[in-house]
Amino acid sequence: MKNYQTNGNRKVVFYGRVSTEHEAQTYALSNQMQWYEELKKSYPNWIVIERYVDDGITGTQAKKRPEFMRMIEDAKLGKFDLIVTREVARFARNTMDCLEVTRQLKNYGVEVFFVQDGIWTMENEGEMILTIRAMVAQEESRKMSERIKAGQAISRKNGVLYGNGNLLGYDNKFSSDGYELDSTEKYVIDMESEIEFQAAIFMSFQVMGPPPALKNYHAWLFENGFNVDAPNPTNEFVSSYYGVKPLWKTAYSQGIVVKAENDDDYFIVMECSRENKGYKHTKVILTPGGCI
Image 1 (tube, helix red, strand yellow):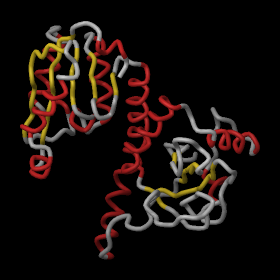
Image 2 (cartoon, one colour):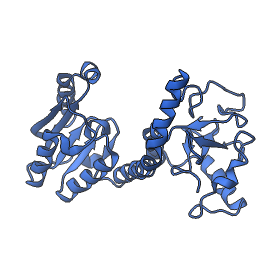
Image 3 (spheres, rainbow, N blue to C red):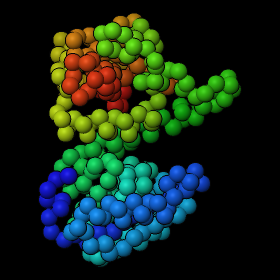
């Protein structure tokens, strides 16, 4: 953690939530609270003011959680300056809600520490990661809702597990040159299931810097008359590579074209080779909103 996070006394509150019976078994509320107490031992400057708990309530919308809303009101009154919560999923399932609330709290002078995500919202990278999640979620929620429902209906009709066997990153192929994905295979992707993973990858970029493989994508863009700002490659342009060959392949990476589940959108995925220290076999969706 950054040194300044442990300097000076901070007035702290804990926020915990369990919703379904399964969660109650896996992350029992008492265990959550005990976990916070153990965490506090690492921060002797924390003065715990309050503990807010929503028990058996969904996290989808903030306004439906009474303790969460009470916490926001207390923040507005200046009762504390730091909210500690285990992870983003405990705080909000709706990414836009999460971004809006953390910005509101920031205006009140209140920081949020998402412990397992390693995010302090007063830090520049904390805001960036939440913004990335919101950006991807906002675009994909518009396009994905209906096609996901349609895909699930088709899977049920055919008696198969939805997305089984062809979701990006879940194949069992492995080749000697260090790449897992086979460019001649036709991959489809469910973007909703990829959002959190992609946010973690971008967080890694902030900590370790982008991998050398990213230069391969930039070179490919310029070689084909595109650029890193605008416009993005089009569906029409990349579709001819789908299931045929990679967009590029170097010692550092290869670029694979994948298709959205039950839609006509294509995505460019960069897969890092073993040459990328810290990013071996990492797969990054370079066009979060799809090609245009």
